[in-house]
Length: 144
Image: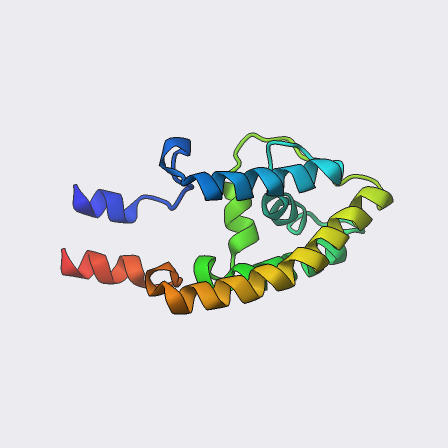
């Protein structure tokens, strides 16, 4: 039973399990995506994670945004933050948006990711259990 829980794919906690501040931050993120002509139920990270994997003329743009966002969230989510956010939004329809929408999205990423980068680096120092550990689940499985 414990091994099943350890091997289960990582997903976002259920809405009832999220803290109030985290719910607010997710809502702000979704608002930013909606302002940039995206689905209001999807975060910016999930949108970027989806389109960075599509091969089209805008893929380099999405890959650049993905690299910036992934770097900002690296201490707590590891190197694939955007892709994991996309996987946690199954069935959601998303749009790339027009040039103005992509410019707004880029502005959000360039303004907020440096702040997130600094805050999360301090946070993992103050709260070490928040730090991403890539082999955490393998170690727990070995202990079982």
